[in-house]
Image 1: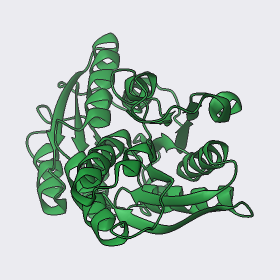
Image 2: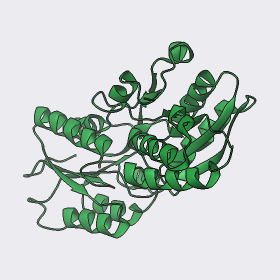
Image 3: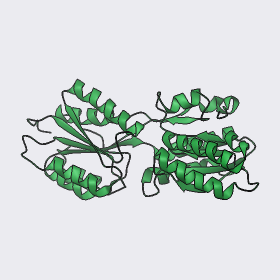
Image 4: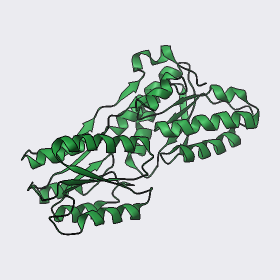
Length: 311
């Protein structure tokens, strides 16, 4: 990759700057960028595909000596930035995709071998399998699970759901009820509250709410507390809640405080993406994809024995 006059990386993320895991990606990327001699410009799409496309094209356009040298993007939905990525690469910009599937990347790597193009993210299906194993450990005699996924249009949500179902197959854990929480606490709280008011108004039982991120877990926990009062069912406050992402300051803290039963630690992909671009500037070949490891918190081997009930 040829050096440019402006060593700036654009990071384009799907939601807003208050989303905790996305903020971790930005913070982590900036640290790695400073070390490598880059600057970082961050863009947030507020969940809007068109807004994100405009942000990307703003980065592509302009004088070559002044524009961004590479784009690190987590698309709002799978393949929503295929055309933009193609135009970016044709303009000589590097492209690193985070956490989503983009069908164009293999073709772009073959057509533009000198441009750094890669994908970075966790094994989404394995995250789902970890969640499923957590459910089995937390409910050794089986039970009913309400599953809150992020956004059904994204591969990350679909693959986590598939992995979770694989892991609970053959057990007495049932997770037939699936809601869309749109990756944020407010939507999860609203959706879970509606479901609880409709389904739990009688004598139905619920043992656990499993969420695909910790912010939705917090929203689900708030829903349990409010609906327990509304329906006069204090037992709902004892329903276990699990999450994912596992930031020290949030998900792990909720587990340590006994507010949720478990989370999954997913390392930030921000620094990995920056290091790939920095390596390309040094003439290094970069892999087509990089998978970051995910682990249960608490450790799976002790989870069942150390189940914490929400307060």
